[in-house]
Length: 338
Image 1: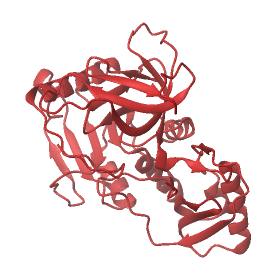
Image 2: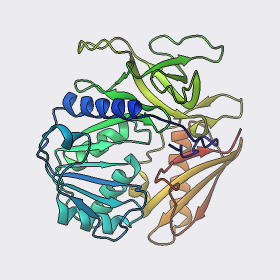
Image 3: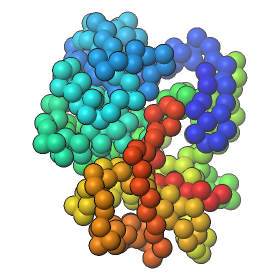
């Protein structure tokens, strides 16, 4: 198995049939926890290796393993993430899935494009998110737009399932049967509930190539024990990676809230990305429907500064599209400061 190298260090990991069995077990746990209807139509929009890349997507009579090995399931339909959002909306109109699995950023773009074009979104039962950090603001927006419950999963290719969202609360339960997760502060001490630190992982079953105290690059906030009764450790929030942290001129760092939901009310912004190149250099990359006026740029600058909690100088650049990573990930904010 290969990692994407999104932390800057791509890895190739040897795995075994045991690790695959455990992956299947946690996938089924996620289905059971969220009481999914196995007869539902399951839709997927994501990066796919060697896919049928046409706009028709691919179809299967069942969900595939592991669900179809244990249950009679509904059909599966899948579309590669490379297609334009309008093509994705057309595909959703045709396939009408009950459950949709996709990246948070892609779900947001689907909702915004539907708003712009006065199109109805599919009537989902559940929007399943993965691969990217999803904050409370984004989760609330998607729940309103899709009129569906929103669930998330925290995983990584190199270690498998890390944490599943609690079906009764918004936080995450660490899958401790599969790995040991530590959240450490800058001095290497275990974080307490309410504290945020670096995620350190040790795999427990991959004897072909165990990862011991592997620093994933992620940050997370430790949570209190969950009132649902599940005794698994709790992560209150997944914060993202170091490269997604804003660096202030005094050297302090924090994760900005960059949903910028107000952008569209100011100017015809189709897509955006904020990049920090230096302590006083913030670039806002925009895809727009028409040229932005100076007054609109000034208003957008104010929204960015408010979100970043600092009076940064802001510069704008315009492009036809903002590309995703080779495996479909998208970052609204990234810092180029080491």
